[in-house]
Image 1 (tube, rainbow, N blue to C red):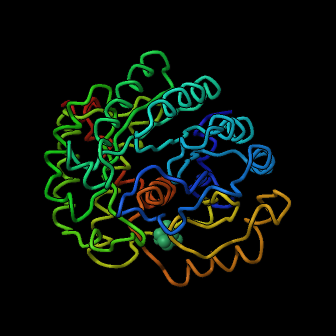
Image 2: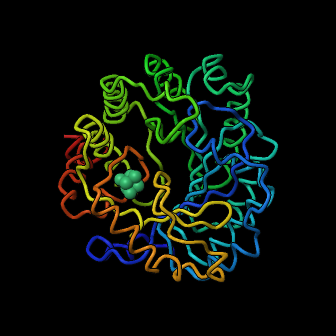
Length: 364
Ligand code: SF4
């Protein structure tokens, strides 16, 4: 029921969403100036309830990858109930939970509850670290956030000793203010006990302060090549879920493609957002991705019937626009499906796979 293999036909037939992102809240206890969701930070009124989410998820098919986003997702005290509703109804192979790590008292018990209630899914918890020490606090405009993130990390790491379905990683937003600190950040993350992945996400969307987007692309390239070197040299770890090596190989292809996409300023791969990927915000609006503001519809208005929105004429118009405008972006999550479900990318992924430590070719 939770197997990834059943999604293989989507390499050729892209009909149903298999990647779904749910923005559970726009509330946040941090004030990162590079956040792409800052305009939506509201009081939290009118968020979808557990009962509503139960009905929406029951109308959906199975999912390969379920991501939660926000805001700070753990500010929703009912997060385990929301995750469980999706788990029961859509059987996600992977569930991703990002957090700023600021509230260990909320994050750790909720994560444990999710691990207990979703035993068949790989639960990936990603903690944000955008600098070391005071740099992190300054960047996030939140004093004490580095220490809190480390406290959360340590408690999650201990949780990982008891729950094999927990996978832990660090995410760093790459922006103008930390682009010269990447080696220091990577060195630090490499020493973090229990860390199974370190991702670097290029700042995206329309942050409150656009100066953070003025990055030096060559510095991004150096940082991601450093991650690749550490991984292939055995100095960095990989997730332990089934097919994690395939995901890691995809990451390596993805980072190079993101660099090239931004450098060339054009789409290099077809985008499957709105076809095998969809996004729902906290009030039930459905979008093809996190970046486009073209709404496909609202699930509250459709009687909590997700297919009615996703296969509507309005949704077709949004898909046609994506196709016709050939929009492009650097959003890592969409590169994952755009690479893994594009038959033309198989060769590159396999090549990277064979270069990972532990494969016979890499070992020879
Ligand atoms: S290329 Fe980016 S902005 Fe365009 S549809 Fe895909 S994910 Fe959205």
